[in-house]
Image (cartoon, rainbow, N blue to C red; front, side):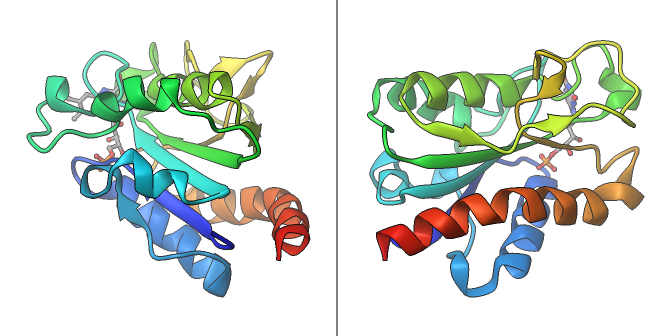
Length: 183
Ligand SMILES: Cc1cc2nc3c(=O)[nH]c(=O)nc-3n(C[C@H](O)[C@H](O)[C@H](O)COP(=O)(O)O)c2cc1C
């Protein structure tokens, strides 16, 4: 599909809010964001261009039934996603966490999403600097950078819009180039 699919997991809605902010900035380039528990893997697979978002719950986990989301979330899709063929797909990731309360496992679940799509063959773009977050440990920090945009809307909410803008400014040329090539 020649549009960017924005797919998120959430419990209390913040990751949806971020998805909507991203969609608004992308305008016609993106479809309306959808919760992963409303769609199956087949629908995700229709997109060649994806922005996937997740909060971290439990003890540094992806959201899902184990973290008390009755309808399930990324945790339930992950085994299928790992087996899928995502080669040729361009994927950017964002993750939410709270460094004040969970600074020892800050936004850890973003790593699991990254690891799954990367191993499934996707080209992952949009790594992000760790400056200005001030946490003790994050699994999502690989070679000194986060594997995607990290948003701490709980303790750094004033920075959210600026972070989204800067991240989109960096990744959009890559999406646009590929979108044009596939048109
Ligand atoms: C029970 C619970 C566990 C959490 N565990 C973590 C964690 O391990 N690491 C982290 O960075 N944030 C953690 N958080 C913070 C959430 O990721 C953060 O509040 C996020 O914005 C929630 O997103 P949502 O509103 O889309 O569900 C946790 C929050 C709750 C309530």
